Every structure is written in C-alpha cells, then in structure tokens.
Length: 484
Image (cartoon, rainbow, N blue to C red; front, top):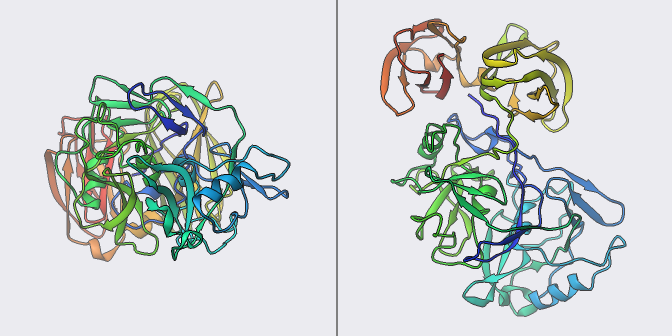
C-alpha cells in the first residue's frame, strides 16, 4: 500500500508564544530527500512524495531552492565565530544582491538531505567544504551563549559558541548566507485547535494529532500505529518525517520546546520521525522536546509519536488507497485504487530511470466520481520508477508517491482486491512466505479473519466482513484496502 500526500506551506522566522503570531519566510516545507527503503512496514519516509528538493544553480555563486523560495550562498563562507558570521552575512555582496542574512534554524534545517551523511547535503548542489556545523541566527532560549546549528551528520542542535576553532574550540562551524526572494507573509495565529482532537499548523497547513500516543512505541510499531489511526474522523494519518516533526519546534521555548498551550500533553519527551539514518539503518531520527534537538536512536527503543496529515488545502478530492506494480513475465502492470473521487479527469502515467526526472508515458481517463480500481501495463520494461499525476476537471493536480517497479515483487506477497468483489486475491511469489499466517483487521484493530497463505495464487473470502476498510497483515507487512 502507498499513499499520496500533497504539500505544505513553509516556514517561519520567529514565534511569539502568547500571541501566536509568526512570519512565514519559506513557501513550502521540502521533503527530507530520503528515497531509500529500510523496512517492509509501510509508512517510512521514502513511502511519501510531497515536495521533493529541487535546486537551480546560478553562475553568480548562488542557488535557488524552488520549494522554499530561498536563495542560498552556493559555497559556504568558511569557519568563523558566530559574531563574525552575523557581520559576514550582513555585509555580503553576492550575485548582485546585498540583502543576505544568517538563516533561521528552520531555514538552515530545510536544506539538509537525509539520504546523505557527512555532509547531509546534496553535494551536486552544495560543494563539500569540510564544515562540521553551520550557524543559524537562533540562540537557545535560556542561554545566549548557545546557538542553534545544523550538522554534517543531518541533525540540528544547540551548541556553545566557543566550540568553533576561531573561538578557541576544536570544531569547524561554517557560515552559509541566505536571502528571501518573496515577501514574507505574516501569520496571525500559528496554530488552530480544530475541536476534534487535531491541531492545524497555519504556517505549514499540516494537521497534527493534538495528544501524542498514550504509550511509547518502537519505530516499527510507530509506523503501523500512525498508518492505522483514526483521529478526528480521518484515517489518512502517517508518522511525520524529521523536517515535519522539527517544524513544530519553537526555539523560544524549552522544557518543552513545543507549544503546550495547543499540544497539551507534549511534556519533555522524545518523538519518533519516519526518517532513517542512511549509514546506520537500524536507527531513526527523533525530536527531543527538552530544547528541540533532532538526533537518532535504535529503532527498537520506544518513544512517543505525533501523527500528521498532509496539507488538506491542496489535496485533490480523492484518496489513493494503494498504488503498486506487479510483474507478469516480461511486463509490468501498475494497479491503483481510489476512494471518493470527485470530478477527477485523468491519470498521467509518468516513468523514470533515476527517480528524479519523470516522463509522461500515457494518459488514463478517470471514472470521475466514486470508488474505482485502475490498471495499466507499461509499454516497455526499461524504467525503474513510476508515479501518477492525478488531474481534476479544473486542471488542479497532485502526484502519487514514487514506486520502484520491482518493489512489490521483491516484497514477495501481492495483494489485489477489486472494488465490490467478494474475495481478496493473494499471490505469494517468495518461497519464504509459503505456509505463513495472514490476519485481517478493521480500522479499530479488531481481528476479523485469520488464514494461512501458500506459495502461488489464492483467494480469501471477505464477503461476510461488515466494514468498508480492512488491514491485511502478513509477514511482509500491512496493506490497507477498501471493501465497498
């Protein structure tokens, strides 16, 4: 199962905790850049494509982030003290511009790419300079001698300003200047309590679970908890990636560093993100709400979670229940299932060899309204990735997640359920899943049916299940499907 989540609007420079007024200095919150999969459990960072990072490199020594709308200094300015970093940015003339400044903590964190480490930057965009940390303009709320800095390993934390070499320390803290290319937008109220157990962030348009999970969970448990949660009448929740989770942090607050006037039980705790470490795949990133640092832990350790939903102001009026690829002999067939289509016009099949540059292969007309199942056989088996561009009658469009065309086959169990059919079709393609259990649950986690599956194609009767959505759990993972 895969889900489509559309993007968000971002970000902010300063927050007034009482009045909740803030200023949005970034248009949207970019993805973390993590595209590799580290688990068969659905819900990890790589399972969602929202706003993938995309930069335009200019010949004048600058680079534009097309997602956030920020322009950056291409090659950082080198190691220096925080005091000199402020002066450096304020007096910099680069690319014909003089309005450079030191980035906020959230702006600095926005260019981190979690698919890489040491440095956690796309080095085809930002050249390697040997920096271990990069300064931001935010100081720790209760200690002006500590400054928020991003680090080459991927995190962000509060560091004594004396740690850098120029201040007598032993570490390399560099400066990278930034400037805005659109007018900052004032936001009167950062958060809105929706009165149904959810909180809307009016800067990002992300919707959050108001009260975090009652129990602490391992990372794998957290992925399943979020994917199967029903909160406020919605069931399209997920575990946030580390940039989304960090967007809740307020550098003006400590103990906790997230506004507890809205997130009332936040406390001083650690919260899992869906983002793994690429070089230590048994570990994942979390946010600590003591001060607001992001760091990592073994996935077997238990932490709390906040579930999140995507920007509901930009979502198309349909839900993509699943999107998968099935290989039969030399052909690959794409299968997808929709729920609650409203004025949907068409689906554009887009394919890619590298997962970054996509080309249109064909257009499939949509039924337009209701719940439907679609399939399309690729014209040739030369691509490695595929996605759907979903377009409504008004021209508004969104993208599905990107799938690896071999991912479903590698997983070993293919599940297909046509709408209004009385059976599930399960094809076990991997020997290791022969003679293994399959459990079917409703949205509340109640066990509805148990069976044993064997290698090959088989069916399971679901005609007597009195529910509209079920979750099918096998040793290969959990799949959500619509019954009616």
